[in-house]
Image (cartoon, rainbow over all chains, first blue to last red; front, top):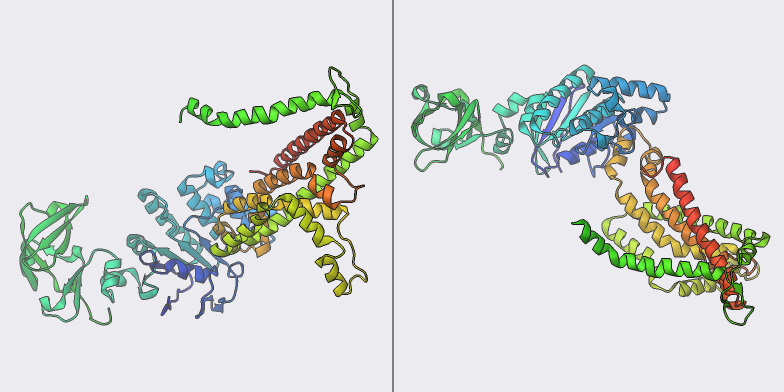
Length: 312
Length: 282
């Protein structure tokens, strides 16, 4: 890992996005104090914590496996961080109950051991356990990876609400671009131990600095600039490409053959091909799609984002 | 797997248990109830008497039993304490070092227990390296014999039990996800608090099992006391051996063996019960 430098403003939500093995979990562990960097510094609220062990960083972490203590009830799991701070036992349990209520666990569920809770409930307990210690920093390592899609989306919303209410500075690690874009104030895209770009979701999505960043955040058409009379690589998001009669109004437009279609419910993705040219992905409302194979296609000028050709 | 298949698979072990454990135990109990033959044969056939048990549980017999139980408890406690420390250390090693360490722990089991005991006796003798080291360091003026006492016997028995204790505890520790300890630290627990509140309670099933193993082996201790202890400090197992081979009193030896078996089983069961009562083993 090298050339990694980023900051999160207090109360902000930063997500590190990248493929598995890119170093994003390592980075989160460095921030949490579970690993020690060979070089570089970690600062929390302006204080250099690089040499401090995890217990002295006041950073709550939610592990991908949740790492709930199997021998303790949900309530005792949450009160653990308060108990080790030497607070009166009664106070610990009361605060644990309060936090578990906020994440939506019923009193009966709070008495259960982790093995007797569902995946979603375990995730809530893990989150409550990390938040109840009023951390200066909340670290989330793939917190939704073990949940089904519906629950994932629901918990994602709850996490964002809790984080706003709490005002806790948060760093999340994920490989899911949708998740990163949905909850973050800032998204950092990582690859091979490097942080390629950090910015607000809309910025990294629409104005990626490298082709890798463009692809990391979703489907992207990467067109050789020369094809369009431009330099560098031109990135066009599939949903910004237009088809049908309006296409002729675009600066760049042509007729192409539909070689593949995927129906996604409200939308459909069409693969278009012009002789000898790479496939162009187009995402349109499914209702707008005609059955004809020859389609008029156009790229509006403001849909094209030029990525200069620098180092790969 | 069908029920019939599983019975079939269990049958060799069943035959072994029935033929080599239950059968001899029944014979043992029968022998313990014969009248002694006073050196003319093993016992007087056709007789029934409770005298052998009365002799095994008289004042001296009970003292011997008490010493044996205490010795067993000491073996168990020492083996569990040392074994747990060793297992925690081995767990903290890298994969290669861990394999080497486990092999080193098991190595003494490749040698006969007798060889190990005689080795220990040499080590602890007046001419042995420990004694000479103490003289060189000026701790003692004259070479000392460090065996021939109950601590040497304890060391010997612990040596025999320790590899089992370490194995049992390593397996238990292997079931503890390091992420749980990391999570505890992240929540503000010091190294000690994380150990005390997470690692230790989750080790309890292994500690109980290792303790039970140590207790049962320790109560039946024979080689350590026989070869390393003072002849005055002997366990029931050694006394059984004396009755059988020195005095040729087989019924009395059998009665001692029955008492020993009951004691070992009773203590083991009591220990497990106490562990379950205190909430361990979850």
